Length: 228
Image 1 (cartoon, rainbow, N blue to C red):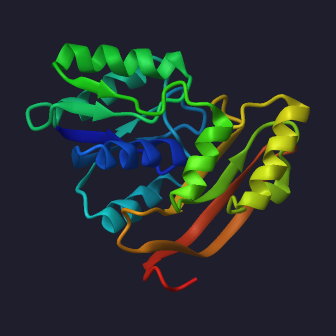
Image 2 (image 1 turned 45 degrees about the horizontal axis):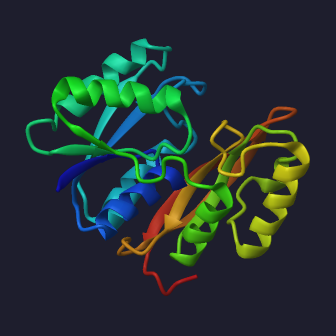
């Protein structure tokens, strides 16, 4: 099936893309929304500009839309973006894990446009999900945190098996969603099996606001996978 994938640059949307390709589908376009607000209800904000590097690493055309990020009004912006490829694809891929808010709204838009929705991660158990990510060769960096138990020291951290064990302990203690579905953290995929090159962060800084923070990537580039 020919699909377009909604991507934010984070682990969920990129792993969903990986899952549908592994299942034998083709992804013709990456669709990405650029929100003006940091607190958009629907769309990922930190370092979203780096989706352009992911698109180059994948060799898939990227189509972008912009939105002011206002609740419900941003759905009209998303509809315009999806509609721009509706005549060329059969369905849309989403990285929804457990958020009915996002899933239901995307499904409604796609239904109106006659498109199928593929959410291959829906309902996945968080520990199993992380295990699959790491076993598949995903390199995932934490780029924002906003939950008790996740301090400034987590900004810019690449999640390894050791770091995952620590995250599991913290999630249990502080009762946050290990998959970050409640906005506890945001991520950026630096490498995965379908990338022809990996993303290397050259310069970045941390912005901390008392109980939350963002890892602001100021410079990044693509490099051969053998360079670590």
